[in-house]
Structure formats: C-alpha cells, structure tokens
Amino acid sequence: MRLLARSVFVCLAAIALSATAAVARPDVTLHLTGATVVKTAQGEKLVPVDPNVKLKTGEVVRWTIVGTNKGSDPALHFEPSDKIPAGMAYVAGSATTTGGKPEFSTDQGKTWSSKPMVTVQTQTGPVEKPADPSAYTTIRWIADKPLAPKGSVRFSYEVRVK
Image (cartoon, rainbow, N blue to C red; front, top):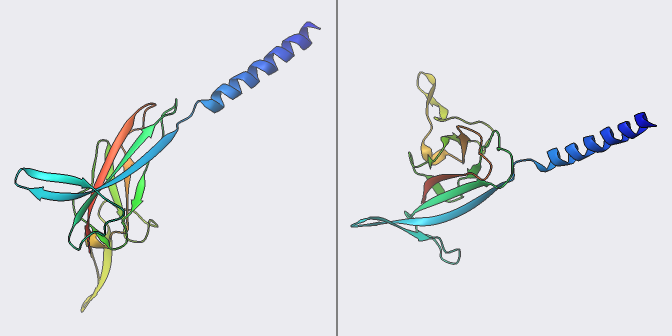
C-alpha cells in the first residue's frame, strides 16, 4: 500500500512540475510605431504617422519596433523582422538597435546578409556587387543575447517615400 501511495505522490509531483514548466516561457510582444523625420534648425523632430494623411514623395519615416519579454524565461534566438513598406526605400545606414545587428534581404526574406550582394551582367561577364539599399525588401535584427524576462529592446530604421 505504501508503494502505491508513493507512486501516486510521484505521479502527482511530476504533473505539478510539468504544469509549472509549461507556464515558465518567454512571452514576447512587438510594438511598431512610425514617425516622419522633420529636419529643424535645432536638429530633427519626429511627427507620428497619421494613417489618414498620405505621405509625400521624399519624406523620411522612422519605423521603431520595441520587443518586450513579458514571460518568465529568456527569449532565445530573438530575431524580429519587418518588411520595407511598398512605395518606400530603405535609407542606408539608418538601422539602429540597443542590442544586436541588422541583416537585410533583397528577396522577401529568403536570404539574409548584413551586406547583400547582387550579380550584374557586364561586358566581361557576371560580376557581384553590393546591392543598392533601395532594393532591400526586408530587414531583421539578430539579437546579441537572449531577451531577458521583463526586458525590452528597441530597433529602428528609416525609409524614404518613393
């Protein structure tokens, strides 16, 4: 009888630990905001994008993504990404982060590189050269460490309206 009671106790303890382990996990939320960048004599001013107002050709928009881990475990392999909006071109060198490095894609996220290359035909044959940043279709950030529980990280990049 004691063996049966001990077995039941061990099973219940295993179930309780499994339930606890299932609750302990990362819970990452991403928040995207956009603001037009207006140059002033004092520097720059950010004006939140109004979805009811059409952007003008040449305007620069800064997109910011804030990732927050509301969970109890670190978020491993945290790699947020964003598509470059249609009708906009990435502004070279504008990607920033508080923890990681940007990578870019010219093929909607099929391949990634910190410096994408393209093959162009010349009179002497095909040559690889750096892709024009305006050809980037997608951007992602490779975090330099797991996103800690209750931690957050900010990523931003700029685009110019075509």
